[in-house]
Length: 85
Image 1: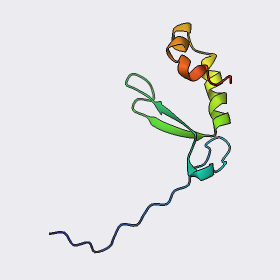
Image 2 (image 1 turned 180 degrees about the vertical axis):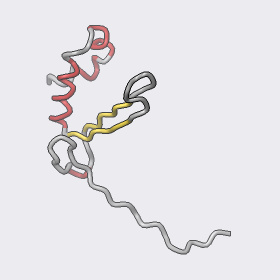
Image 3 (image 1 turned 90 degrees about the vertical axis):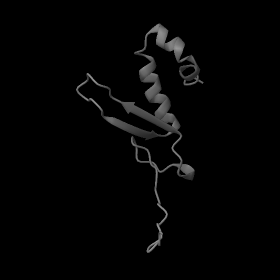
Image 4 (image 1 turned 30 degrees about the horizontal axis):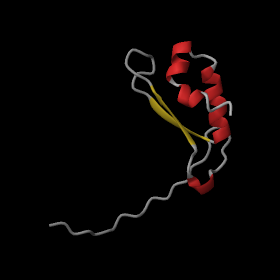
């Protein structure tokens, strides 16, 4: 039998931009960039998430777009075509 001695408290959290520190409207980050580093790299097993505004996310995607091969751009066309509009 389980007897609850102290009920769990609901978590409160606040999301803000990792670039400029702006608190998000409705506390929901519009862009979440996930970075996962795999075996064989000097960052083996590392993981991070960046919470960004839409403008910051588009800026970062624009920088990434400039580095991609033609094949990668075509594969991810659904994302990168939207940053210019």
